[in-house]
Length: 396
Image (cartoon, rainbow, N blue to C red; front, side, top):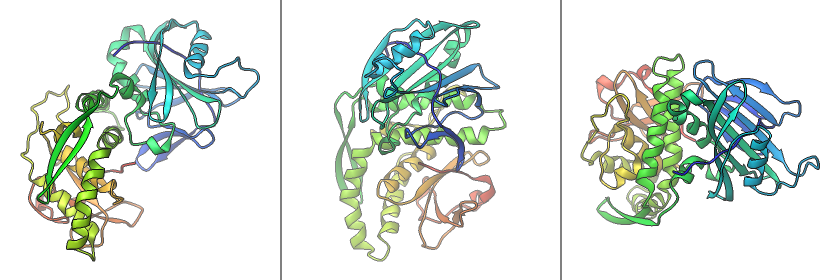
């Protein structure tokens, strides 16, 4: 991963809001969002509401968000992400080296590893991407003191990687992961579901890229192990892994649905959704269970591209894989995790009978799906049946 640089101040009429179980920054005018780690506080905002400065009371990481709308005649001729980023960094007298790359539907984004001196020496990462509004760009700067840079690097990158500038690509690899692991071409994966051989593809970089995201987010999660927002941090951990995984498995999901769903509809025309969901659940229940003996500093979650390549799996990854394949088919589902049970399950909305989990305040009930025993949806072991010990991870 090469290094480059950037800086700015902060942006627009953004709304800091609790979205389901998350802390989220979003803006309806410029149509962007950030799913930031828990606990950040808004320290400053510019008069024009185009720049925002956030600090964290527990960790020495700050970030700045700024919107540049180049339709403003007061701005110089800024017509590309690298020029906008360079302009922002120069205003801070930062040392920089800017690189450009493609991300989702943005052909020319910019990134920089930068350093600057304010009240003390700081360094960090910055990104710039065009927004949907013509001539508008978002600049994000996340930084810490030079002494804490190495230990805070995952935290810094996690902030930037949560950026979304197009809701059509919300559940696709983030800007940092895309820069670090550009596409390398197709890698074939072969699945056997419902006695059907399904040949599909992921990218050759996906296993390593997904592991990079996994380790980055796990390092952030560790910081919250004794924090009062540990539950929210845990939910964010799985949510951001899901966002990265969903896009990496897009072709696999398409091929699975195309092959399996029609067979399920023929087998159960009255409730094809349940038949499809049971087929996927039964498939992951056949996996040979393998959870790595990881240390506390390393996650034992198996990333989903690695699962498809036969490199291991666990209850977390099985449950997330079920959710990816159900949600890709338009079926509402989410994960359930439990610290007390050290376990994870999937949940799927359907009127079929069985043990269900009700999402608080919605009245909606979801069948609980055990991925490690060969049972049907709604069949849960008695020693795992206490609903109060399960935490929902509502997926985007």
